[in-house]
Image 1 (tube, rainbow, N blue to C red):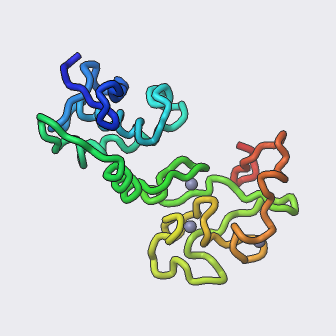
Image 2 (image 1 turned 90 degrees about the vertical axis):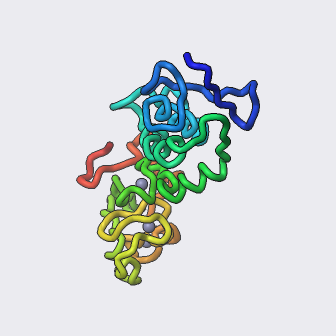
Length: 205
Ligand SMILES: [Zn+2]
Ligand SMILES: [Zn+2]
Ligand SMILES: [Zn+2]
């Protein structure tokens, strides 16, 4: 272990927890190596309040958003930190995270601004069918996306699916706003014993 330590909220009694993904020796900063990568990871795990166990589960386990973003965070913040003393505020981290990664979609787990789009799943409708979602730019009642820009709400790219809960997404049933219309089965109405999510080809996931 090296002598470097990092405190959370400026409290010496609250050391940032090291998760050994790259560097058994602990944290480093001021260059682009493995110690700095572990520092970037630990800061994001703290910021996102992730379970450290999830971080190390690796491939096949639950996706860690911190692992996903930590190399970019390192390049932006950790590589250039001064040797002696530094401080990073939650606001700085938050600003970077939402500018670059975006809010995390609770369905696909991706950052909305960095992913192309979502809707891994069909939409369970009240009439018992599963509807294919309408992609950004293919809405019939508005010209959203015709300018080629990402969705202003969920940041889906043109030609890709919106992330659930987006206020732009059109209902494939009635053509209205999906989050406002009555065609969709609500969480309450979904049968708890049946799979919640249905693949686009109709198979439960
Ligand atoms: Zn999504
Ligand atoms: Zn959208
Ligand atoms: Zn509808």
